[in-house]
Length: 226
Image (cartoon, rainbow, N blue to C red; front, side):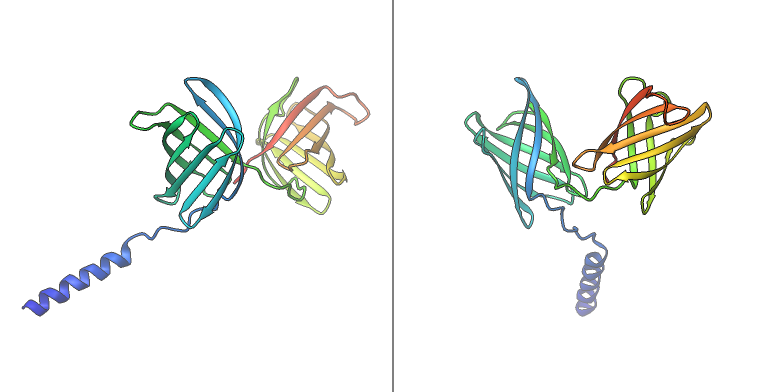
């Protein structure tokens, strides 16, 4: 009977281990980060360098002298501490799955939250491509070019859909500029956009009718990062 009970206990233990969710490898945060922090003294921005080893991170703001340490407690959350000339305290950080952004709250030791922060990893420029999802923001007269835009690219040819009503057909005229035409429920015209150095944003102008007509509006595109 004792042997049977032992076997059952071992069996349950093995089964529990088999179905327990394993913690996946956390995203890699090593690199340079642009961080905006809010608190009772207002909003500040700064640059932080982060080094990650396994589940642990170490960060430093060379300008302010603030240092940071922490460890992943699950795939997306870090519990940490900060210290510097202004004191010391705690951090709770929530990291995006791709490791390109984070947000969180901070406070002094033994006290509740004093403020929040957001961070974006400084990424190297990537090859220019229009393919992907974008958000169009009005800059002046946006017309109907505002909201989500999805683009496909084949060679130099680009086809984009703004919402479900406007279709843009164009080609790369240079390595960073697309010249196109647009068709929508309220007319047709031309659309020209050119990419910034990070390939995650562009500026665009558009007009009605033939591409010899003057521009009547302008928008800014921001890539939707996955």
